[in-house]
Length: 353
Image (cartoon, rainbow, N blue to C red):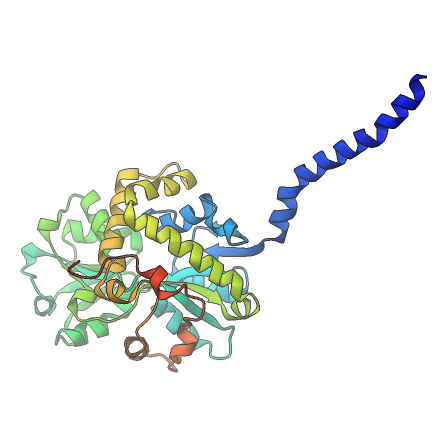
């Protein structure tokens, strides 16, 4: 009499087991269907990487149907080359380095900026006040140190021309990045160029304060160059426009939250690299936001986009300063087709509000 009852239970048991297996597999199946994006940062996991890491950890990329892998980098040129090679679909790098790449590889793989994060170049001159340097004119006859790939070094001609200074009025020392700030601290050189939010913190670590320095950020001294942008492989973007649009929506959302609360945002950097100095990286993030993200243009027109006339001018300035073999077109350098709507990119209140 027991056998029929036992027999009747088997189909139900198998059904329950099948449902359980389906529940276990659902996340795996869902993740497998997500668009895969390998993303290359320009540098280590430091403060300015916060919105990227926040978008990943808070699930903003996942909500857009994306499976995003974010890796640290070793410079803008490396990020651009890795996207060009196909090792990464998207990345974060200096728009001026992208202009240089496109000029030198006219028949190579297309790469475009798709979202301007740093509305101005972070390049700046840091000079010793005690050496009588208070303005660009005072740099004449002085010695400046920087690595050969440094944006400030490469774009020195733009800075010099904007400030009525002959490009050859200074002597340059090509130095290792790790030695740059040390040389200035020791007084071995009169000035250096470097990213504002990197060199300032490095100098402070070595005992120099802002009171000891004359700091000349390039954007404040007539240099209209853009800074870092999110870049994408042109072929990937054309084949997967919704994935690129979704990435930018998620990033834009995280950037807004980062602007609103940098102290909270830095936790996502710490979660990725537990060895960071939280206080220093919070300050680095705030310096980056204040100096090159929160700009009059960003307040008036929203973050992420470009002014076409300014972009044309910037491309030509880079071509001249870098002595490039050709001049890329604005459409080669930047595409606005993937950007979120302007109203979603108004992350700052307008000036005076």
